[in-house]
Amino acid sequence: MTAIFRVEWWDDASRFALIIYSLNGREQEFGLRLDTDKRILVDHFDDPIIDQAIQEWVLPIWKIVAQHRMITDALRDTGAETTLKDNSDVI
Image 1 (spheres, rainbow, N blue to C red):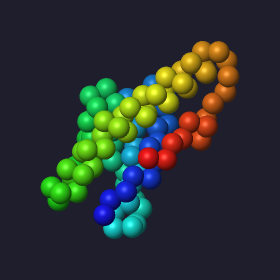
Image 2: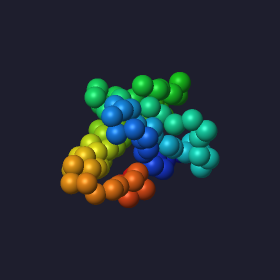
Image 3: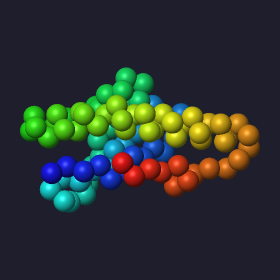
Image 4: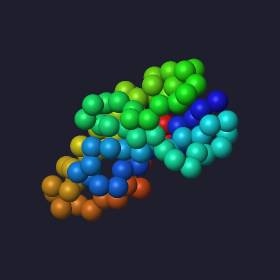
């Protein structure tokens, strides 16, 4: 069983976000890289069933990331401070 814990990005200018996930109930050491420009995962699983399940989450995750980036950009343009923690979502 695979579960998505959170999505992180460290640089607002970066097109990549890191999807932190668990596999069989254990958080994995490395996340999955999401290319937000292409709306695809750079990383894949050898197991086609797991890979298919994760691929189904790419667009919903991308939509959340895009929405938060728009909010972050708007806040920054007004001079308000924001952090990733302020813009985190549980998926």
